[in-house]
Length: 371
Image (cartoon, rainbow, N blue to C red; front, top):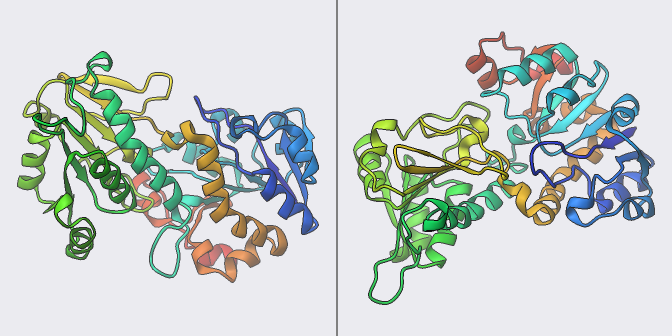
């Protein structure tokens, strides 16, 4: 199979779909690997590193899209990239379709087979290809929030951990999954006063056992959420409904209950955001202010720590990439129900129910695509 990876063109996105090590694994398995010139520079990988790994360097993305049987990316294809997809091609990347009707429309039109990292599952009911980026984003959310709280960045001028004699910042984490857990870990480590909200009693129990007295847990209902948001200096939105748009949990009315200069960090922005006032931002202009509350809603947070993120991502994506290259996408998905759960678009049809429901398309089960 011919496997290609192009330079990411989203604002300040420095990750790359294939590391030189991944390219080497594919090449060693007899596959032709095409890498766009300079695609790996954001992770410190030169074209020479890829050539030494057995890959070929092409000068532009158009040539790779034209030749490759499978495109392996990181972020969802931008409009110019979607226009280059074709019916007999596999796209393997993050898609986040539910809040993105334009991308969905273009992928349907392309006829390509589009497999989303974020909906591939595992035996434990987890999302293993989303997990490493959720870990990165959760940890980064605290760094980003701490910076946004600084007065020079529009915040209240509060230090997360405080100092002796001055209380630490209050941090509310909405959602106790992978993002929320990692955010809480970082916030606790910096000495903040942390409260985690979740609707799962099992999750709350696990969090309580892990953090003991270093973080508080609350059941996430309207009253508790409103109370915790009102008291917080920093709110982390870490809510996920796999493949579906995030629920709008923090309303605009709640902003008026917060201290001016408090900060909201919406890690769910890839799925539309869990704050009513959220809109996607970039690393170039990461924040904006609504009703005196600073909003940080960067849609590709892990792109800022591109080397860590790329290697963490390739650790979990490469086995699936290899499997599809070795067996063909149809056989690979047919023999692995968890990879089949990643199929979102096939032959101009939506094959992931949450996306179909959110965007009003007819749903075709992956089984129909595989038979």
